[in-house]
Length: 221
Image (cartoon, rainbow, N blue to C red; front, top):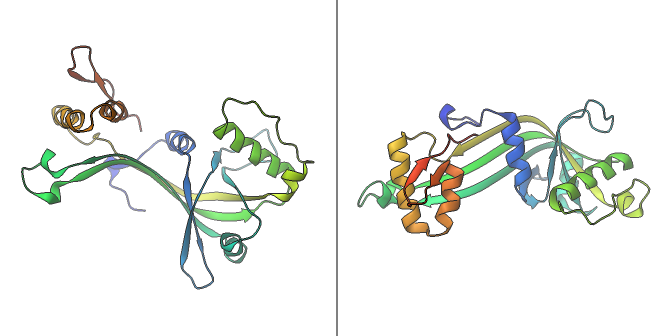
């Protein structure tokens, strides 16, 4: 993945935070004919824990039905791709030019990972992964932690991806000069209405009480 440096997410910590803020990722495995098979999955990214023998390297975990094409693909070829993205906003061409359609643009965040995938066999690690998934998706709690001895843990399939190459890319106006960022932000508010304030927050732009705009911070990614 070749990146324009000014669009690169330089902080691994910010990449991981973004990944775990998103509900769906896409796993790409290689089928028996050499074609990629891409499937959306719930997932959690777990960082290596030095004091925990269950995971001593970064890993992405997913749970799955025990049978299926992606499982067959992983058993045959462990090379795997994984991708997560967030569409922020479409920017119409007329923001930039009165009539030139080629000027249309998009604000987004994306992360692309290359790695190797495995089917987790160890029930302690399976329980660890499933609990990590629960902590991500059911933050309010109200459940009993899964235990390696549970039948549900022993029978479910857990997929593990070890990231070997991880890159993030984002375009949320950070490459524009401040005056131009504010100009585009005004256009976004006019077009998007209430949703526009959410977009501006991601861009690091604050709406003041008098409805003027202020650069609150540089985009942190």
